View 1 (cartoon, one colour):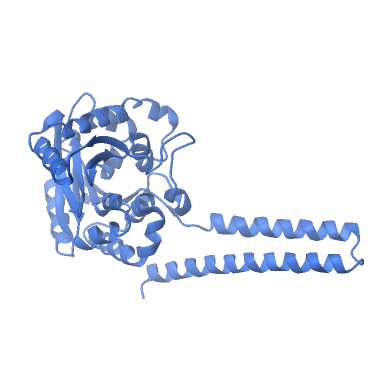
View 2 (cartoon, one colour):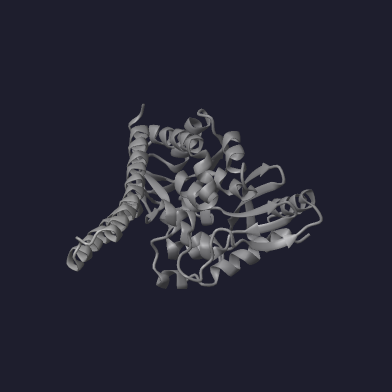
Length: 343
């Protein structure tokens, strides 16, 4: 049994003990209330002290349950590797594709030669993420970012569990053991050609991720932006694919994932004025593993995640002042991707 598995088991057992203690406390309160009603030996002062003790105990238990949750970061930094971007890229591609994952896409981000993203997936991820909701397919892409700086390349990835919790939400718990297995295989193989990962980019609790929004009045995961309605799923797929092949609106197809009546396209936004080259220098190129942005087709409707959700989700530690500098970006992204739905 791995250390990782042992820690997971210990954390689960701790939650169990806290919850069990909480219900025992509820039962104790019930018994004390019955006792108080049956006897007059309790003075008013004793009763007040008893109530204060019970209240404090409940607060401490509740705090333990809430703050005992694991916090996750959106990204993992695997450190720097000596070499050229091309050599590191090929080493990672070779290692990952030999271990149950397929390379489904890659691209140069923002048109910069020192920024590169690789995207991997497999059939197990596609099947697991779409068991409950078709939109779960958005979580089936594992991404590796490469950033060249002189003679070293920094390697980072998205944190799969962070994405699972945000995109699958409560459905993640149903398939957690299988999804964690996929995640651990991916992390281990990237680590085999780099170094041990360090989380970065902010941190959120599991419960917060399942119901994430940046702040009050901001959108949740399920607040999809609808772009178009087609006569059928196949017609929509055909139109989007044709527009991406043609590079319409300075876009490019990075990857494509499909399952019954659902498709996800990862789309590079190449417009220098309003695309990646515009917003990345403002919010941080270190987070490029969060790209590319997606357009997805469910049945006969095309959607995107709301920009005010998606940018905040993968850049959760940014201040409102920084986000205000890209206030037009969610609308710009919507317009660029909506163009892919027009015949």
